[in-house]
Length: 295
Image 1 (cartoon, rainbow, N blue to C red):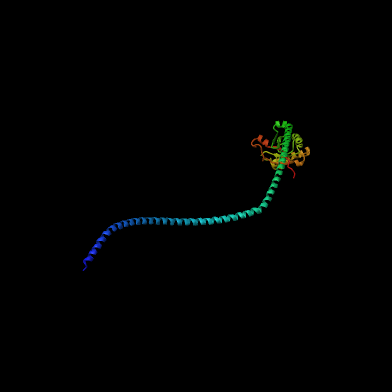
Image 2: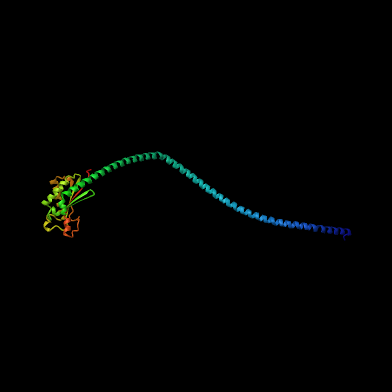
């Protein structure tokens, strides 16, 4: 059984402990509340820091990926730069090797240009000479035309002769009736007189070729004449040939200036539907053209 003194001391201790613990309790309680608040703030700050750390880690990963892509692009650019440098070196080598040949080519081109300029000057001079010669030929043709018109004035008025000049070609058209009888190729006396006057003028035109063309209408050769002329081809050719012989033998026109063509009915100048039209188609055409130069 405890002693009374011990009990007193115990009670005194409990009482003193009770008094101290109440003041301490409030302080401890305040500290606990403060610590709780601080803990809450620290946990919040920790959570924020943790979130920031995660964001930074993501950014770091992104930057790392971007850096790797940049490094890869840089390596590709470096390779391109090396290839471009190699291409430039090759081009410089090629240009260096070709510089001499290019210079020679340029020199050759200049020489060619000089030759072409010389040719141009020569052609210009020839063209001017040809223009002068053409003007002289036109003037001569005009003179020949005027002389023929003057000599054949009466036949022209009767419609037996027509004379035309176009682009340096002079044509004398003589209808059949003043040269030949129907179906015949022999020249009539009146026709010889006409050809005498024409020949006197033509023999003076030494720079012209004289083409004599025979033409007929489309009426077939009669059976009576077919033993002599199988068709209008033969008749037209025979008539033109006799005119050529007259110019050569009677007027002294050289044979190398004369040529013969027989066209029969195939180059008609009228319709052949009427007697008047057929009479126009039966004709001899004497065509003056510039002589071909002998090579």
